Length: 585
Image 1 (cartoon, rainbow, N blue to C red):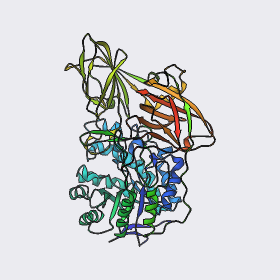
Image 2: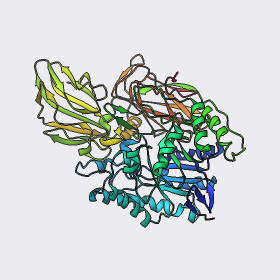
Image 3: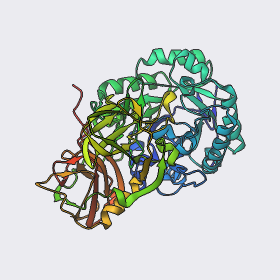
Image 4: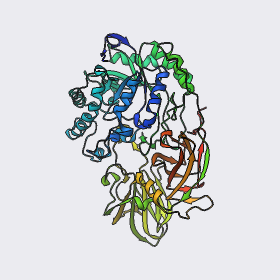
């Protein structure tokens, strides 16, 4: 059945009748595909009529020319499930999305070229974007509402007014989108701040806002810059994200519900950001830097109405009550919160797995950045001979974290976040820096910055000229290195110094969501049955990793850990409930 969705003088119009969009954001790559329908259905039960999602370019095309729209990247299936649940969809394909996602969604093969002017009408950037949008719109176009699908709105760029004001760039994105067969209304989003709304404006786009409080003030500002048509908060911030080493963010559900009520009572449409956050699986978490670099945690729970593991929270029930004042809410029974299975499993060690997943890049006079070595490189070993017979001071520009060893003895770390970019070295011969990229900046002008060792390190102020031996480690491949390795004796009294691989088997009566306790571990990566859960880090606030039920199975299951620092408890514990950090008082 086809319908028509339009922008009227005061309202969105569905087949000519006013339609208030009550939407919620969820990002399909942050949710296991086996849970897509469950999360969409729960959003519908809260009273939503629409689901919004970003499209992360770098998830679909991590290597240029190698497009992937399968599995966790199957946007088409996600949109089809939304339609099957009787809901509409809003798609925001960027090409830049922010979203606290790695590199703001831009592929590292694109941002590796410093000569390309990102998010502009630079012909080289437009050439790459053209290929991306053609592929995305091939998925979206046949799923628009006027062809019987779910899509009612498509957004151009994302918060562009906070970054630039290249109208030719916006015009080209609009042209590419329309030529690809996108017929539904096109939108923009910016914070309701005058210069942002104007910088990101284009006559072909309907303005929407992003905000989480001061509702009447924000709507009034938006109306000043959008004189006709419906008002919409495209990102109603009902929670927030977490950085490693900082507190876990929560918001008072009653305050958020009151603000939602103000929005809906004003007749505005809304997209709740996030209705369900999900997880930054594998290496997809981003970072922020507004003067201090802060990488994001693996969980993207966002204190959302539907939790990371799909539980219905107090915020869900409060929002549902508000929505029921303005729209019909399904009367279906709501699922109860269920504890996850608990178990404790001792881990066995297999020694250092890094050599088994290493690519040797040869020798360099100046250390190359990770971006010089290829797309999505996150862990690199730089080594050189210094032959020093006295204590010296090593200084290096590191992005983002380096473990320093001398003659295979650990001597300290260099860390961008803390500003510790120099340390004293004892006499020694062979210097090694194991450098990790801990998350790429997803907002503002530092998007696309190079990672790794930036310029030559110095010893007592004198550049180390090398030669530098450089090896990259294929982190996703480490799971196979640990699985296939022989058992070692790296564990002593439940302690183990990294890099070290650990593994164990455990049994389940049936597939189930799990919460993997990381409290006794240092810093590293975890997998269950080959599925890359993501990073863990002792500095918190996150203390458990979410294991989606569809990656588990009845009977034997396998856990793999790669620890880069120190394990103080070589045990895998699965808890009944998640621990994402302390609550805000």
